[in-house]
Image (tube, rainbow, N blue to C red; front, top):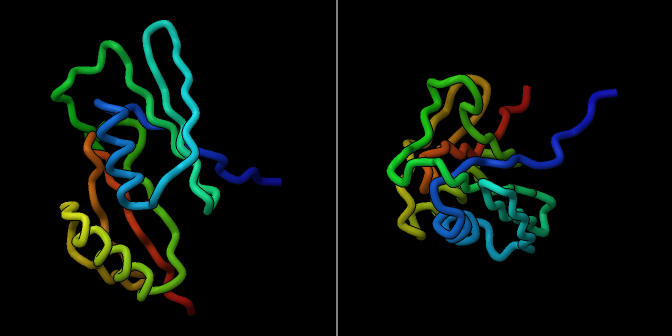
Length: 130
């Protein structure tokens, strides 16, 4: 048996900025707060079942940005049904004024990628059927 991914928790510069960005994109989420001795976290769950946690550590530099070339997370890949759904997310990103990369069409699918306020890449991806 292989377990499914339940949630992703991201270290961010600002929980407030991250929540504004993600809720702007996906709509309102159910939010749950949790604090540790040197960090605070907000868990966001959307009706689709997507759960993202946003953790702000006391020692994270305010101007720091995510670097996909370092060990750890490269990007978040969100599944889309088809090319049209990827293009719809591209339009939504543009409508919100969120900077994004070009629409890509590799041999195996379609994609468009944006970066959240902490610089984490969020990719909307659909697999081409055989």
